[in-house]
Image (tube, rainbow over all chains, first blue to last red; front, side):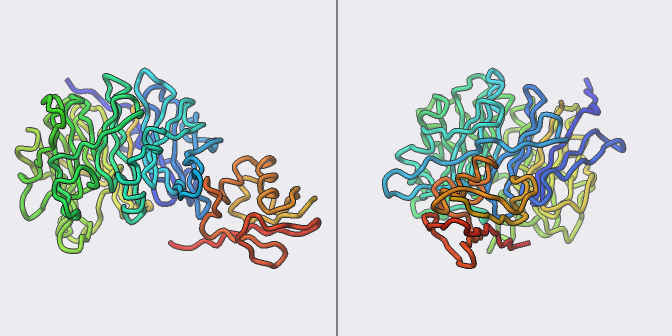
Length: 381
Length: 88
């Protein structure tokens, strides 16, 4: 059965110079914004529970990081009175300061006003009032192992080390994961009170110990919405799948990117799961050869889809540039809607928004000339 | 004691557009904290949660460049809070 996309569909776009919203579909779509023009917006999300609240991370000039909130679909914004901030230093030990509010994640459906925020350096914060007041998750931020897990918050991406891919198990609000670049993927069964690293099987060719327990570089990790015991990960060192239901004490990741074409490789940033099919995910490879150009491989962008859990991959590039396109897609900048057939959307580092109405079968450029795109999030409300 | 505080345009979103303010305090930290009471959120844009000045924030007492928030200010002094933007 086909489900039509409605005029209420919205793509929320975070860019290097502010936020935008593309409302509606097709020729009737209307671009609004920029919101907080001039401020870096690493994430911009609508609350899927109420549809009422939009949150936007913001780093303006040298004013440091904060979070803005709108309850009228982006027409007006107010700053969070208490944005994420680490606890003050104890005694004379150095303590981190938030540099970027990097990843915004709505909480469990049963906790309607709860949000999480992942920061640079790798902090985890929680709001229980719809994003106005944020408190550190002490089980993570003040964990005695935090400095070891995160390399003291110093080893990370060009923008700084980040905590991202906050995943909440739809069956249990206490079960959640975070991923750190660098640091690896970590799981909590008690809503952030305690954590364990879950990186077995993941390569880390930049570490001296190939079997290190942590220190890895996941780029994007997803609990699959159709089966939260099946996890997929696009890592600095390949594409992986983990089947947590295997009942092993420490489940192990399997590298499924080895089935990608050798000339393309399995390096990239984003990964998008199909909403209802646990065997189906999409990735967008980038050039991770030699000195890591981090652009489309050979200047020919392509999306790759697996429909069998990573045993095989299909290239999807119809409509995408055939040559000399040297952009890439960052980890928050690839998303799906809930239509049938499925809609997919991604934003590029060169400020273009691309969309597909047929699950990646063909692509069309929806927007051009935006600033560098950090995030693309879909809202059906 | 009262001091005059001049803030750059990048902070006008917190001051209602005003660039000239008056605040009370014996040290720079006191003065900025007093400003934050009148203009909530302003202090966190200048000083991070560990008490460190954010990068590229420049503080002057009169025409003297200072980095220490414990610097004492005298009655009638003028404090400048400026920010040097850089990058593309």
